[in-house]
Structures are given as C-alpha cells and as structure tokens.
Length: 60
Image 1 (cartoon, helix red, strand yellow):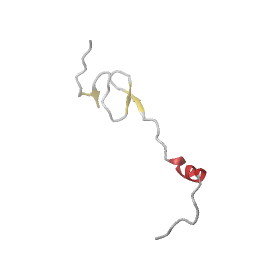
Image 2: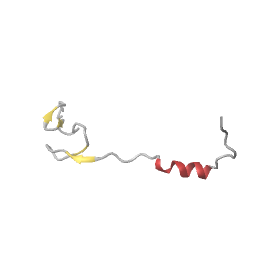
Image 3: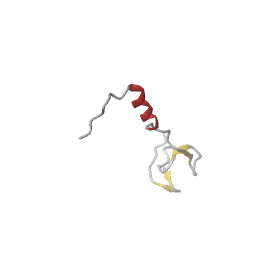
Image 4: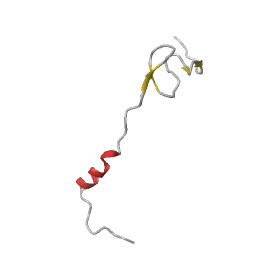
C-alpha cells in the first residue's frame, strides 16, 4: 500500500479544500403572494406550492 513520502502541509491541504464550500440557497418569489421563498419548497407565508394550497397557515 502506498504511503506519502512527506507530510502534507497545512497550506497545501487548505488549498485543495477551497472548492468544498457551501453556497447560499437559491431564492425565488412566490407566484401567489410575492414573498421570497426557497426553490422547490412550499411558501412559508401563504402555504402554496405550484399554485396549490398544500399547508394550512394560521393567521393570528
């Protein structure tokens, strides 16, 4: 089994990991109420998804 000849330095390891980062979620506007919402998720403000009411929202 191959073994590294030298220790990998911190800077080399960190440079290799620069592409492994999270990105911000994509946000769109709800077609019913116009509030910002995550893509492919039901709207938290009005409870609709693709024009259908899927969540019952209590308005207090």
